[in-house]
Amino acid sequence: MPTTAPRPGQRSERGQLWPLYAAGFTTAFGAHSVAANLGRFTTGHHQSLLVLGGLLALYDGAEVLLKPVFGTLADKVGPRPVLLGGLLAFAAASALFAFADTTSLLWAARLGQGAAASAFSPAASALVARLNPVAKHGRAFGSYGFYKSIGYTAGPLLGGALVAGGGLPVLFTAMTALAAAVAAWAVLAVPAVPPLPKARQTVVDLAKRLGQGSFLRPTAALALATAALSAGVGFLPVTGAAAHLGPVATGAAVSLLAACAALVQPRAGAALDHGRITTATGLSTGLAVTAAGLAAAMLPGLAGVLLAAILIGAGTGMITPLGFAALVTSSPPERLGQTMGAAELGRELGDAGGPLLVAAVAATTALTAGFAALAALTAAAVLASRVSDECGVRQPRP
Image 1: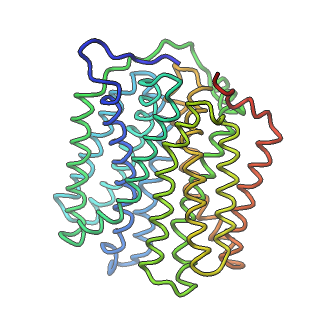
Image 2: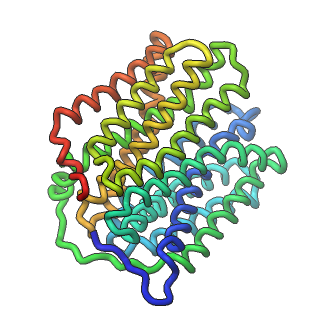
Image 3: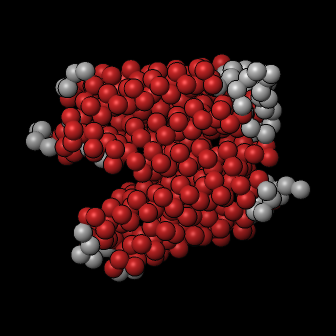
């Protein structure tokens, strides 16, 4: 995997990465800070639940459709222009609603934010890979995931504080400033990474490459991790409420889940870089821990909620950096943006599919059965990965 070495007088390697970590925080903060506070804006509107559902779906829907497109564009023109363009577009979309508090512009702003995040998110992932040697990919993606998890955790809290202080336009103003500041930082610190020469690729070639186990296994693991994370965040508070736990206790459990995921990611990445684990073993272990966490959510009371939060957080925290490191290793360097965009699509589908599966099963039986269904699906992935050739994902480093 080619990397970009710092030239004399260029900023340090670590300094090049900080704006990329900030970009990861921005997309996560943008997704969750608004989603957690949209209910206050839509309450009282005609068909408020339908409006809320549509606004929530816009951001993720745009990402599902556009991430592979922008990932391919990053391969063609280089990831840095796509990163900068996406951040500036995110700032512009946020400014739409920041200065005009109307529902129609909120729809446009939310769609624009999702489209912009579709650009700078896979570009940032590609740059994390290109600016680091292979031996540091685990820790680099672990750190990237850590700051993204901080954005998911802080989004509802900071977003709620901003909305309480001045309404939803204040939150969008803050996101405008955040995205613009990160873009300016990236201009100064992130070096140009030119596109690599590549042979012509047909649709059949792309389908064959994305159909290989070296892509499907880590992408499936990432999708299942995101599914478990979303289901945990969405339904553990419901489980807690059924056990007569207050909103403070259930909120703390969700924060514990996100904190465990954030703390485990850099450590899992460092273990990979130092040869203590392989991606095959790490992904299987992460899936097993995640499945155990989903099963623990079936236990009654506070103990079940806390144990589920810890295990789901730890399992998904292990999967995320190892999955991305495996994708980078197996991807042709000149197609890295395309690979990251396609993998991000898998994560977005897991993000939506996990809660839908739990909800669909729970609607006909009980919430515990919904958690059991997702736990069984995750455990099945562990068994499938053990049957397959584990060395196909990644060999241990010497």
